Length: 54
Picture 1 (cartoon, rainbow, N blue to C red):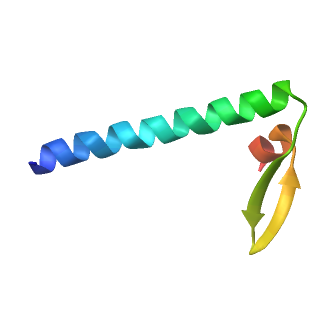
Picture 2 (cartoon, rainbow, N blue to C red):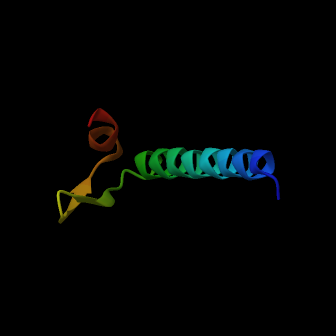
């Protein structure tokens, strides 16, 4: 693969990851659930709104 192809592939992967994150947040909001994330070395539960506010 050329450098251009690698860069293009990485951009598509990054876009896919961001889309998956947005979908997860929206689904969790719809289901009135919490997301579990790691913050400052600690596991915390956040609502989707709290996650987006940070």
